[in-house]
Image (tube, rainbow, N blue to C red):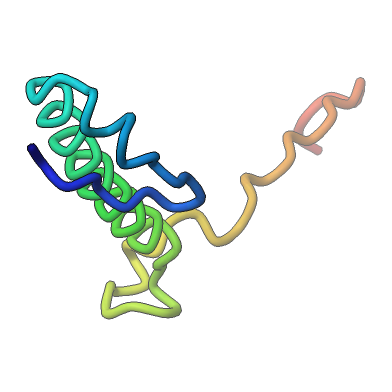
Length: 82
């Protein structure tokens, strides 16, 4: 039998865990490991997305859109020229 894995906030009854088929136990342990790896990866991606040219080594030209796009001017009825 496999030892019951620690799961945050959930207590696994040892009798119930031991009554669970070994294949299912292995699947649960595998999926918990995958989940932990994915949580780590998401944290890394979120940290990367928070960076810009102000708080990283990226040059300002790659810092993203600092200024909003200029507003389009309203057209007037006057003719151009003098």
